[in-house]
Length: 433
Length: 203
Image (cartoon, rainbow over all chains, first blue to last red):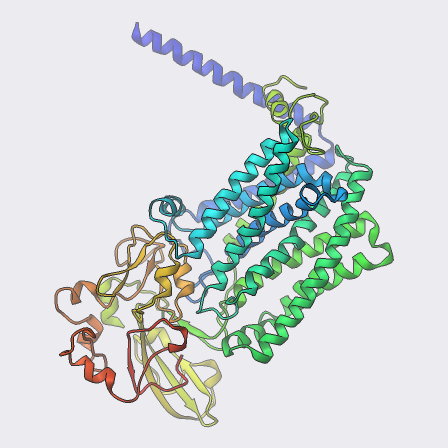
């Protein structure tokens, strides 16, 4: 009896699970059938790159596996730089969004819904990358709670970013709800976290007496300013695509966002250029020997070509010229400038992390004079590529299933009038076409 | 270097060491060339192996043993987010490798380059991999009243170990003698490894 009863139960479970799988398969088939060829190619390319990242991630699982290019004298490499890039971009997205939601600048108001989805994805992407860089990520999660170290900037950073993740999830749900005041309040809190979080991240670097290039109060401020650069660029790319692909919300409002981002980028690019020039001059003229050596590596040393071409030339000068050029108001010009800026910010993060460790020294018996060297391994590059593919992949799915054009969940792209979350649920269950 | 590796199960690879020896060679124009082939475990060739020293005339050289400075104010302890690196009541800085997350923050924070993450595929002091490791001044030995392995095997007694808190320890006379220096005293870490006759260019 009991066995039969269990068998019946199991059959029921199996039948239930089978139905769900079959339903999901039908939903995927119907979704693919409704896509254009271009969108299918986009999904296919991103999926392949995401799988490359997943494969690379699997290889990092054994703790201590020697498949990164890092050494005792160069312990933080490309994954740390990518983590900084992704989580600081999260802040930039929230800061740009706050211009509309908190400061009431109409031009930026349409950003709200898309920014929160992007911010969440960038933050989760950053967490994923840092988890792969850590040898024991679970120990960190439990250790931060069970044996907190209040003297550690990394502890504060982890705690603040965990809170930031929570508030972003809340903000997303608030934006899907029919309560605009809740959405507004959550945006204000998220904007506060957007300032505090990169500041704590900056202190992780700037508090190290052993690393003069990172040390100093300017590092957190620099991360905050450049956060706006990468956040605005991501939104610029997203909203030009919204216009080109005629996604929900395209029209004058989206064009207004693109123009607002153009103006914002011009200002921030000019500030970052001035900062870069001043910092370089100050370090070379007045810096300690180690700091001077690191900056010399960026100016005329092993990091020089990469620095001048990608960080300064393509990442700062070219987008600024493009945006201030008479044709710079065109969406295509803004799109290209945003892409260049993003590349520049990523290279900047990479150089920030490497220049801090490149100064002459010896570690664990490795003597490197005048400069230590670091080359990322294919595994590290694969993880970064994977992370950079997963974010647009999931975001594109969100664009397909959720109405990101405005807060309040006015309806999904298929015309279902419901909150975005409910619409997605219905669709995945086969209730919507 | 060899005694330390054998005593503590330090990875065999030459780039992972709890202690190593550097040679600081001074050229005719005053330029200092630093080399440490394989951490000095196999000795040193006659001429500096530093790339920039090739073809240069060397007028003087000195050997500088390096290890964890067991700082009184250790940056590695304050930066650890999970208290895996800690100080014993006697002031020895140790790593609880069962708690270490392998984030590498302490490795980057150490101004003396004394730390590394244990790589897979070789020896490990505690059998854990991907965790931070460094010189403990042979804590297991000094707890039993013995000297650290590197001190015991040094044929010329270049390394001397003692208790700074003990006014009768022979170490007192050594650290109070003129010409005793510290590595990077300007950083405020208050290291407790003292060098007799330390040249100013060593850092």
